[in-house]
Amino acid sequence: MRSGTAKFISGCLLLGFILWPFRVPAQAIDQKLAQAIDQEIEKIRAEMVKVRRFLHMNPELGNHEFETSKLVASKLSSLGLEVKTGVAGTGVVGLLRGALPGPTVAIRADMDALPIQELNTFPYRSLNPGVMHACGHDFHTTIALGVAAVLSAVKDRMRGNVKFIFQPAEEGLPPGEEGGAALMIKGGALDNPPVRAIFALHVWPELQVGEVGYAAGYLMASSDNFIITITGKSAHAARPQEGIDAVVLAAEVITSLQTIVSRAIDPTEPAVITVGKIQGGTKANIIAEKVEMEGTVRTLNDKVREKMPVLMENIIRGLTGSYGASYSFRYEKGTPPVYNHPDLVQAMVPVLENALSPEQVLTVKPQMVAEDFALLAERVPAFMYLLGVRSPGQASAAPLHSPYFNPDERAIPVGIKAMCHLVLSALDQQASLKGTDRQAAIR
Ligand SMILES: [Zn+2]
Ligand SMILES: [Zn+2]
Image 1 (cartoon, protein in one colour):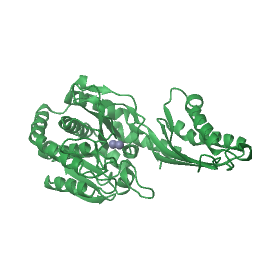
Image 2 (cartoon, protein in one colour):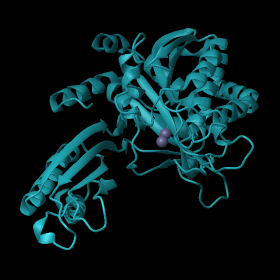
Image 3 (cartoon, rainbow, N blue to C red):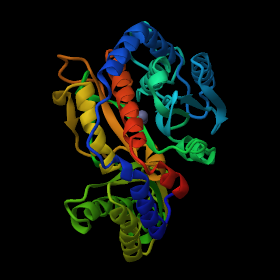
Image 4 (cartoon, rainbow, N blue to C red):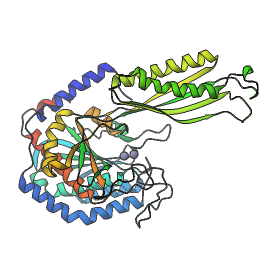
């Protein structure tokens, strides 16, 4: 999925060009406008909770977000946005045009749920057996709809346009299917009008309601998958000298793979190799002929990422060779790391501090989870931040992807407010400077 090094470097240069108008002192949005936003949020607060609960009760898996997509499209249409449906299957793109001329910035929300049986007992728990909004994408969709409602109410004072990108299938796809951010890009979600900067948030149970977390540069890791098959020779379990034991060999391979992170990678560079699934053998009293292992690799650095399959295969080849066994190794590149453009972050953090309060805007360490927002962030200067959803006073909250995940709904208005301030300020900062024509020419 990821392009080559030369392309990557030229992409970085292009990003630099597109981004340069953000190298200006931070601009908080006009105070009257900020007050109007607060008032509009108050008006829709109860309705947004209803929308979130409806989505939570009716979760849909990736590429099957049919009802969610219909709801999103109808809400956007009723607000008077230009709405495009059927982008990347169930994706929806809405365009809100401001009264004043200016560029276009985008907000991305994902809509899919996970194949998890919800174990919460509140009345609005999932009605769809085995499917749950356990990653908070019901929040993301609701917040983006809330931003659309608020900005529609103040569009007379808005310079430029805001594009709302509602994306299906962030959580991965069934084998052979296309979808998610990659297909949204192919479907033209970032074009016509071209998007100059893109924003997204992810709910975060480690942060409290009212707080947001950010990182300049890498926020989340790349995610690649691998399958290793080791083939030895079966024999009677009591006569190992006549066989080649694929189980013993697999155990050595798993242990040795961990030495890549501890011995072959710069210790200051985060990396994870996890074998998450292992299957082999047929019976307790037979030496196993075959073992298959599947796993994932996470990194925050393209160079480390490029090295991983080579280092892994060296170990697998060496160990299987010494036992006289054979192997197959498949390494599939998934999503790149989520990269927040440092200049955009630098320009936007004071805006967040102004919208919330400086104490509530916290730096966070990069996380080794992955997000396909990374693909959008490869194309356009991007800023993804984390929205606190842990209830105040609660020591810890159920993590993402837990059947007990239960984000605090008081975070919804916080997310709407933060996002409104960010996009309006980004539009102002771009519109207040010459140079947008040049960017248009570059794109
Ligand atoms: Zn998730
Ligand atoms: Zn998610």
